[in-house]
Image (tube, rainbow, N blue to C red; front, side, top):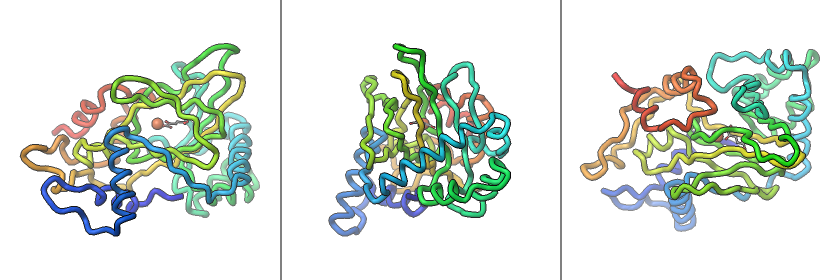
Length: 289
Ligand SMILES: O=C(O)CCC(=O)C(=O)O
Ligand SMILES: [Fe+2]
């Protein structure tokens, strides 16, 4: 499953701009785009039911993920990448249960095999074949909390990627904050994924889409693994609200900004993964003259 530029553009063209006629799409597609847009505006996340990935492959994927996190810590830390969120993260005092490993360009076999060679001296064909069939950018592990406790696995934050598509190994824990301030737990069926609107998509849509605050809370005896395919624009991408979404009634909320500058800015401030600080301020500061 890929989050392609075209796919994200479909979301954008699914908008019915305030000042023009609906985009000409066939009726089913138009309705789907409308529902995606409404969910993105009202909730900032929605469930994708996609049963084309065999459950066995999903299970194999999480077993490969367990193998990866089972490697010595020094090995996991070897995948160095200067780009934010693209390497090993973990051992944070604020989130002791949390660890993650990012793989850049994971749908590309060559970059995947070079990652596997860093992790395992002889490479790991099986790992690569499983991952390529799923596509990923980051895998997360949350250790089980102390018995009987309900503990934060990942603090509340909004995503700095354009979009995220997540699934887990059927150990629930992902929670979303609704617009009226309630936290709701999402237990995903094994054939589903969740789509999340990130801050840049919120800025790109001139504030129409809602970059929803979410967190991971852990309870019970099981550790939890999740997979996140994050939509990261190519270097040099400028996030700029389309003119159709800007008018007198809806002035441009954010200055145009370079995605990579924003991502570096968010990461350098060591906000991640605790970026619940007002995203508007973060975006505005990052693009300030
Ligand atoms: O592990 C999860 O389900 C959530 C991960 C997440 O929100 C993130 O990595 O930004
Ligand atoms: Fe997130």
